[in-house]
Amino acid sequence: MPTALLVEDMPDALALLQNNLTTHHQDIEVIGTAQSVVAAAKALRQEQPDILFLDIMLGDGTGFDVLEIVPNLKSKIIFVTASDEYAIRAFKFAAIDYVLKPYSHEELADAIAKAKAQLHPSQERLEILKDTMEAPEKKPAKISLHTLDKIMIVSLDDIIRCESDSNNTIFYLEDGQKIFVTKTLKYFADMLKNFHFLRVHQSHLVNLDCISAFIKSDGGYLLLKNKETVPVSVRKKPEIIALLDQMHR
Image (cartoon, rainbow, N blue to C red; front, side, top):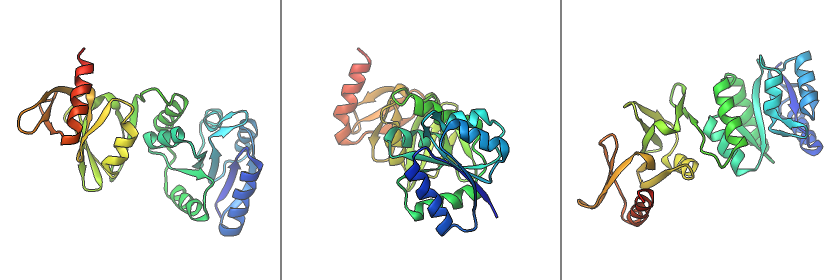
């Protein structure tokens, strides 16, 4: 029987989680609960569970503090976070699954199924999550990309453009590499819109720093620094022209 430790600083949320597991997941044994970083670290030093439910924001610190205190953790982690747009974006940048409070029975069941199948997130992905969450207004240095068979970590500055491929996205990098990612272009356009990326066309998202020129002929298109061209939709042309004018002042 897999074991679980619940780390949650809100008594009501902790009771709800414990009750949900006891009622709907009787194949999981809850071996303990903790409501602080100190209590969680102490519990994990005594016994590491198969699954760790880890709230991100705790009264005396964060879930990241717990992971730093217990660096050799073997538990599969289910991160729990409140409904905060910056926290959600941080998890997306790190390509790490999470459960959003308040969650339904179905969402919890899905998270448990994923946790049982997953490997422990790499230290680099945890660093991306931590850095993006701690400085939400700052442009993240890196992003984790979920391909069909692995997770790749890429510098944002190395991304020239992204192109839609049905419900997937192709990333084009500075070194000529192409990465096929199993998420929609809209997913990444929403994530990157505040970090110098612009959706210039229904099928194209471009790193503004990689634009060489806007060519007005042939309906209007962008010439990129790698010599590729990207079409611009009619409604995006005024925004593109204004942005480029502002950048080159």
